[in-house]
Amino acid sequence: MHNHLLGECIKAKNVDEFSFDTIWKSKLTSDILEFKPDLIAVTCLFSMTYPSFKNVCHEIKKITPCWLDQGQTIPVAIGGVHVSQYTETVLNDLKDIEFAFLNEAEGALINFINAVNEGSAKNIAQTIFNTPTEKISFKKIAKPEASDLNIIPAYHLLDVSSYTKHGRVGSFTWTREPGTLFASVLSNRGCRAACTFCNVRDFNGLGVRQRTVESVIDEILILKEEYGISHITWLDDDLLFDEKRAISLYNEMVKKNLNITWDAMNGVIAASCRDEVIAAAAESGCLAVNIGVESGNAEIQKQIKKPGNSRRFLQAAEVFRKYSTINARLFLMLGFPGETHRMIADTITLSLEMDLDWHSISILQPWKTTPIYEAIGEQIEIEERQAKLEGRYSAGPFGQQRAVEYGEPLLVKNFRDRFTPENLDDVPTKDSLLDIWFYTNYYLNFHRLFFEKRRHKIQQQLLNLENICKVVASGNAFAIYFKALMQHRLNGKVDECVTQELECVFRTSNFWPGVFRGLGLSINDLKQNNFPNKYSAKSELGLGNLTPGWFRHK
Ligand code: SF4
Image (cartoon, rainbow, N blue to C red; front, top):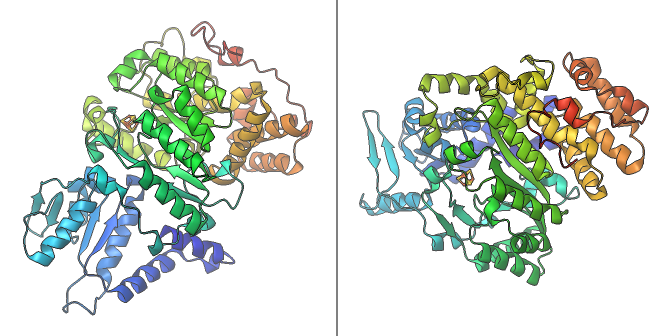
């Protein structure tokens, strides 16, 4: 449906030709009337798509199916991560939906269909019947075994090559030239770890189930030869779980001369990022990885059961710095229960010492069914917090930026005011956490570019910043300013259109000019093609005494 909508959006000559609701509703209705299904299954992967998911379910129920008895509607089954986590709330909200399938449900769905056809409820598993009077729950488990995972998706049912033509697959499309066709592949399910904020273990169960290397290679070959795919986004939560298998998969990709590139968007576990693994990954076409770090403080790492510690993270960083073709990024998180300013400073210090390419920083969003949800205290507080922050999260880290730009005032003018000797052992308030997020994002991602001298990395960062300006957060003045800086470093000059882009933001924003003044940035740097490196990171942060390690590597 997304793909169809995006295709129609691209085809439309102007806004008036694109009617979102008319397009999806008519496509949904016409496909259903043509196919005449006995059952429709709708998935809600993440909470941010719940409103759309609800609309689709309601729309299906409005269709009059001529192949069923008069007055009947088409039975609807729902599933996915959001449905599995918030089952009761969802079923109370969608009273006319007949069935819910929980967790990994491909086996459960087949069992259900067989049960209906055979008239026996014996093998029904992970299913809830949502009747008007009660919810009947079948708790039996029908989780797919590792061998079931070798089934290659029925790609002939949907042209995957059109995904990249209409939109983007994953977050690393900028690493390849425009027109490159991307697809996602899953080679493992589950994760060896049990981070307390993560719902992977809850959804996928204990441990990791692996596909065979042959099956994964066969799938990539189909994608490449039949659909022209030349970049894979791994969907794995623990891609490097079995280091030997990972190396053999990457070697096989080279041996088969697949000539594709790939990224690990969901994050890899630092403990497995050994030299031999990352060398094989780089050779097989790895262009980008996210590394799950979350915190640089030992107490928090222990509290959240992070697989790894700062020593491991630094070792992994050392490996990635050797393979500069890989854009290596950190997942960081702020706002853990009891996390003080000092602990946050440890996270910033560790990130600076790791000295990798980018940092995706989020503020903890406690999911129901995760252990941290329990630990954080009063449910009401969580709900208030979620309600307040939902908009920000839904747009990813830059959603928080938007919240700041459009109405959430920064509470302090200077980052150092957030970290005073008096407050180091205090837990930041919710509001000051947003300030800390804002400045941390600026210093770790943008400000460090003042010190980037490696040509290859400057080229990488330029592509990344162009992508932020064009796709992720258009009008983000930091991204525009530092895009100009990267152009200046590479070509000795700034494109006129980039200066105009920043001028345009300044003309229309009440927010950015003040932030630029506060941080010592100026639009004149672009106009005069002169970016004086006068902003010593250490003095600007004012945290030298607090964390002596900050910017030490610079
Ligand atoms: S390592 Fe990643 S996927 Fe695994 S439990 Fe932790 S956060 Fe979840």
